[in-house]
Amino acid sequence: MYQNTVGRLTSVEFFAAIPPGLFVFLISHAWFSGGPSAEPPRSLWDYLLSLSTVLQENPAAILFALFGAYLFGSIIRSMPVRWAEKVATFGRSEFPYPTVLRSMLRQMSEEAAASDLEPKRLPKLESISSNTFNYWKDVLCIQAPGAFAFYQTFEARSRFFTGMFWAGVSGLVGGLGIAVQSLGRSWPLAPSIQLLVLSAILVVAFGLQLRRVREQEARVLLTLFSVLMQQGPVPSSPAGTAG
Image (cartoon, rainbow, N blue to C red; front, side, top):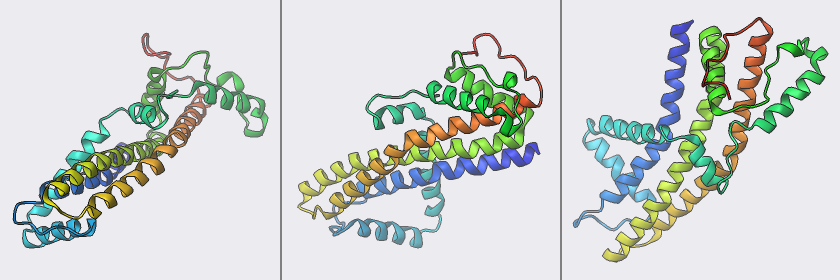
């Protein structure tokens, strides 16, 4: 069970890092591919074709591209999700959303008979912080690896949305840089404009949904931890960990 859980988490983390990392890698390629003898690209597609040509002529470069994409993705993956949430919501970040979780617990207590719950064994949320949230994850990881792996799919989705948001921000910066570079060489501005539009779409699409996705992650963790508490007592939260 433990090996299956670790393998599943590794694959989830890998695919959560690769898509945003690949996008940033493509931006880096577009930035540095325009040498003095390079032909002016007429669209963003020309940059993709040039990268495809390089990979076809040098198969070993595929490993470099994958490593570069994973490197960029890992850097983005290591950034706290709350940073992206604050930027996307203009400074409003309430994680782990105590108001939402308290409301959810209140509804669970009121409907305890429908789910055969023991209200006294539900978590008490007089106060909650990210430390308590992380403690719940640690308990799940030790006592219910399967449930923890299920929760990690929601956490990975939050990370994926965060990564694509930062990839979009990187695209906006890269698009402006390529535009300045193109103006200095009298090259068409179409590729940079296309990159700016695509990046803006990523920022809006993933940024606006980040709060909803992360709130769902918090709800799932609370539900799983509540189910675990129904089965018996769990280890007490150590000093300094409780919210």
